[in-house]
Image (cartoon, rainbow, N blue to C red):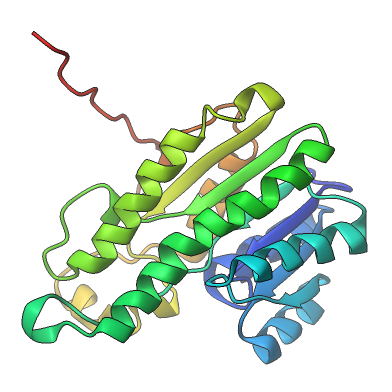
Length: 245
């Protein structure tokens, strides 16, 4: 695998999947920019993997535009945008509903992808094409009774990217998403022990990175690749809706 001279912007790049993917791509020759709201951790991660860092709050559309502009200004263009920023919800419905936490989760997990696509497409168009990969979740492919709000924003990301995929494909801009299960990142820190006690396998971060890299290189657009423990990352096959009678 070689990403020599390719320019990659990764949101949520200070830790977890973003940092790990950035490290893999930088080692393969890519010019990487990590974007994150956590400036200190982001700068440290960038220094450790040989990348650049830009502070970015994905809830703000202007911040996404500024991150892309920084990337283009620093490295001369943009070839890959990994829209990876995400948070756990922290609230449920009715008795446990919290408006502030709800809005935070929807803004980061969904708005961050919308704003990221809007910011990245013009820069990718200038390069004659490229790849956008959004990090969704298996929660976007099934019901999640213990966290319906997280499922809602991840379902929205799945629908968004599947629908946006064909829009710019003719311009060589591929828009896909990856849906990991329970990966060993801090997003599951609050219930990791419960998962392990219940026998739920935790996915190694590098296994998800494998899937991310494969999806960057995929010629498809508008597809969803899932990542599960013990399985190779692969495309999730959606059933078509019933047609009219």
